[in-house]
Length: 86
Image 1 (cartoon, rainbow, N blue to C red):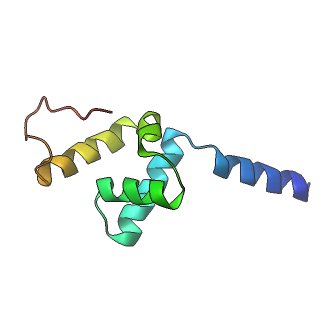
Image 2 (cartoon, rainbow, N blue to C red):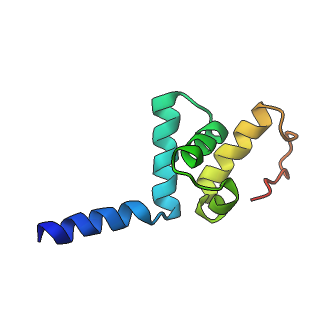
């Protein structure tokens, strides 16, 4: 059973889903005091993940937080119709 639990834990760490990804990013934002954009970049760098490959992991709430950061940093215009290319 110990080996089975180890395997399950390793498997769940390896495979990411949008909810788990959002939790990881939220933790980075709080721990490192980063904005969401920087937290995602840092997460990708630390885990050797191509940024282009995470678009399907970005949930709608996380996308809204990214949009807010992007507007505050003047990366996109502050309109209600602004869309991130994700």
